[in-house]
Image (tube, rainbow, N blue to C red; front, side, top):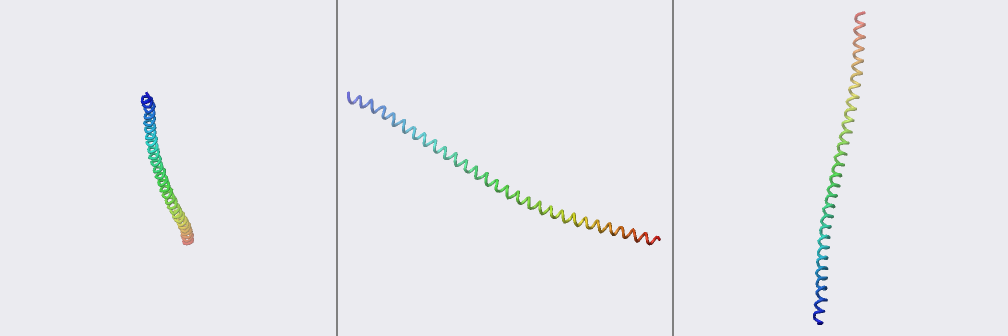
Length: 103
């Protein structure tokens, strides 16, 4: 009977070892999945960071270009204002001259 008792004790021990091995495999599988998901999330976050940096650079370039256009428009507006003022002066001089000629 000692062998039977030994068999009874070894059966639960073998079952425990099998369960322990299955649990270890399951833990390993979960850890691997976790690492894969973590790496995928890191890649996604890195891509989002690169996209954000790219958009920031584009926005800065566009703001610089807008500033240059604003300066160009200001210069053109100033030149137009001066030209209109000179035209008005020329028109007054012409009218004054015509008025003197008719006197």
